[in-house]
Amino acid sequence: MPASTPKRPRIAVLADSDTRWKWGALTADRIAPGPSMEAGPREGAQVRPVLDGYLLRGRATPTPRQLEEVGVRADSLREVTAVEFLRAMEEESYDLLVLALVGGGVQAMLHGLARVWQDRTARPVVVTGYVGVVYEKLADGLLLRHGADLVLANSRQDADRFRAVYDGVGADASSVTEVALPFLGGAPYTGEHDPYTVVFAAQPSVPDSRKDRTYLLNRLVQHARRHPEREVLLKLRSKPGEHTTHIEELPYQKLVQRLDPPDNFRLVYGNMGEVLDRTDLLVTVSSTAALESLHRRVPTVVLTDLGVRESLGNHHFVGSGCLASWDQLDAGHRPAPDEEWVARQGVAADGSYESAFDAARERIAKLLDRPGGLPPLAPYYTPVTAPGYLPGILARHHLGPDGTPLPGAPAADKEPGPVRQVVRRAARGAYRHGVQRVAPVIRRMGEL
Image (cartoon, rainbow, N blue to C red; front, side):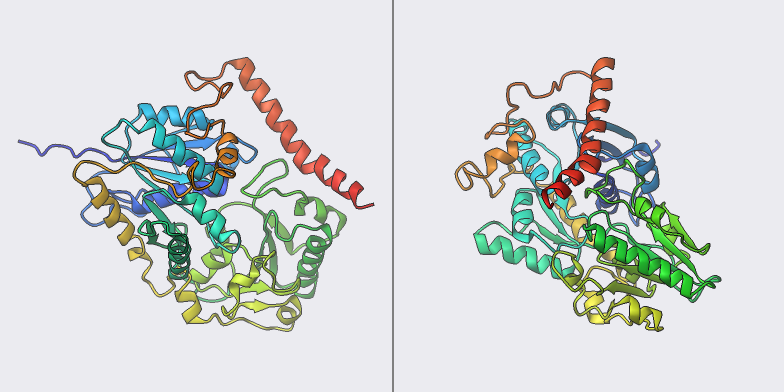
């Protein structure tokens, strides 16, 4: 008789931006009980998992172009409110749930899920973590993520810091699991291209002032003029009108219109990995692209022109060997990364990347096989431990202190009708217009 077909594991990913969708979907792929959807079957794997994507409705909900750029394919993908998502989790059955959200969103979902699963003997393994470098709000972000079965740390350094925070407040730290950034990969750098290509990886909110962003843009254009034999690329995260994980109030596309860049200077979009395929020097203030670049051993510079400051995030790279200024680059300086620092950052440039997710997969497998099912979700924050903080976080997602939907919460029992869809699109467009155009004007008026 033919062998029975194994059951396909089911995975759900809830994300609130293009970057978090990329992180969540690729993380799900790396840690899923089954073969990798990108790299081919893993050893011992028999079936491909089913991936259902849920996009949390908000200012940063990804556009079709952004989803296409990420390059991750889901079996289904739909936009939901928090209440609609919780209803889906009450009705559907999954093996694994990845919460790829900002900290407050994770906390709200943990409390909402604890309510909808309170009478269930079986539930998915819940996983969360961070998109990239954790350089601010460490305690706040971690405690908002506490309660998931696995809190992923992208490096050995982060794992140590995460456990120290949880231990320090008396919270269970056993959920912290070391992995690596899920979007690393690509061929190692083997030498200079023709033409030699310099790429500046821009960030939506770092730096945030017009003066600083104009300065960086001018230096990039000047570098292109000094080196006409080189190709100088400004790698952008989004097109005007699109939102990312962070709000971009002063897009470089608008700033560059006031300049007259040379022919060897270009704006580029697309997948960062494809851009790195032709990169000879990656320059950034503090983008996670630096870690992607270091993983592939592409020469990488983290700029010091605006100082080494926590507000810029480049303080994370102290000790990396990658800190340098545009003056130094123009003079021919090339960085040499510190191998010990790189090894602690989850970059896995030594070839250990393929095994970086083994511990997470093994832990998930054990949880799925746990006799009697999984225990109830138990976040550190409760109405008892944080009565002045938690209710506000839950209310932003239309949830009460016990995780139940508040009166007037968006309906979760039907798809929006045509009128509601039109109104929603108009409201989102108005919000984005206000964030990108009206709010900066008001701030500038306040500075007069």
